[in-house]
Image (cartoon, rainbow, N blue to C red; front, top):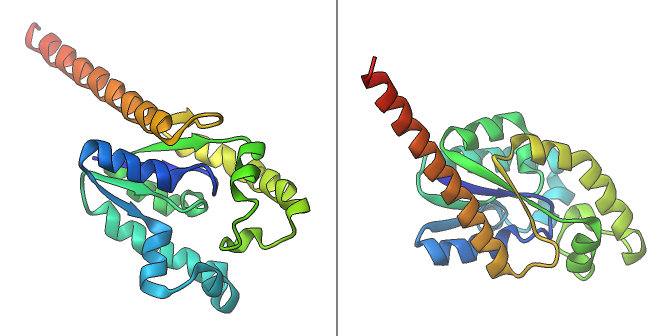
Length: 187
């Protein structure tokens, strides 16, 4: 089973993914970084080829990663907006939505000029983030198996919380399956 981190840009998916991989010994992949490594700068891809082309590259990365097991995957902010991507990720994984407020996102992103959807003056950053969050948050919540709030927490605190919530769910699932098996044998 893979562990997939989704959420808005600036929510901490990369930092938390790296830390969880360190804590669990699993391999970590960042879909955006894989695209950069293979195809070049994301801002350039958006500028020269458009967002739709970038989304096709993302889907190819998802197909590749979904075939593997025991990974930590930091998903690009828009990756789970595509139903096919979600289905592939959910087939062998649990999705955790790292939920952050607009204020937290704006504080983390105000100096980041590498994000193509945020190429604007600092004064309108919060407005753009609020609009993206308004559209994306319902999708993130819908596809997520778990939601972890990140505001005011360190990377270590968030990472431990993600690991704990997934572990508790796995234990509960295991106990439920055991109870079902034991109950079936008594009939």
